[in-house]
Image (cartoon, rainbow, N blue to C red; front, top):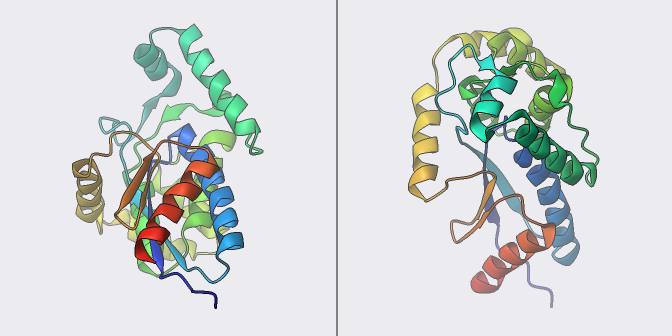
Length: 222
């Protein structure tokens, strides 16, 4: 007799300006596809958690390339980072256009929008995917509330409703509190995957590593 595993919660700590988080999303998709092949009845609940990769970013953003040059020490070092990200992303069909990014975005409102979508019971992944596309392929300023409202509208949400919500300050403190909580768990880099609060997988790891982490939890709860 086939035993149906218990529901499993998978928390993804990420930031929408982290290029490795976009790759991590693709690797997660492959890992979950493999898990569902092995456990067709499994229920996996994904929950996206905020992280501020650059918590000192001004609300209006700041020039992207100068920040990276200061961070990595030279234009050559930045180009090497871009090259490595592009190489890894290409394996998953991701075409990074770093040349289109003008501003380093403050991601508070992006995380608020994701929080809002999840609080409705929605699968926020299509929205998150579209924000990643805006950031890394279209060069959109994903820290701007009006840009986020446009993105939400493309994903099927009512633009006026989203814009009005983003113009307020709802969930600001909750998002910040969740981010502090993730750091209190020991999260220092993203993406980080937390499986049922039992196993932590830091980094945009190979799908096989994520599969093993999920199966480790399933074996422990069997």
